[in-house]
Image (cartoon, rainbow, N blue to C red):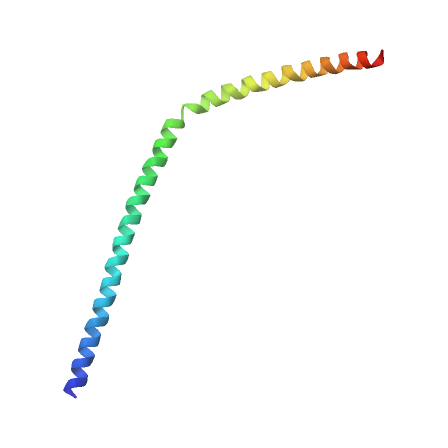
Amino acid sequence: MYILTSISIVLALVIVAVVAWHLIVIALHLKRTGNALEKLAAGLVAVRDHTAPLQTDVSKLNDGLSTLHQRLEAVRGGLGAIAGHLSAR
């Protein structure tokens, strides 16, 4: 009877030790993951802050490209008219 009790206590202690070890390893991995996520969040904030001034520049560029598109469409229409006159000859 004493031997079975001793074996049961030893097995219980081994199980507790193994579970504790796994929990410690999991905690360490979670800590590393948390640190990596903090660095990622800081990087994303830096990207947001550094690219914020680009919004006005991109809007100006888009307006300029729209104007250029309208002018090129007018040129295309003129060239189409010239090509029509030349092919009619």
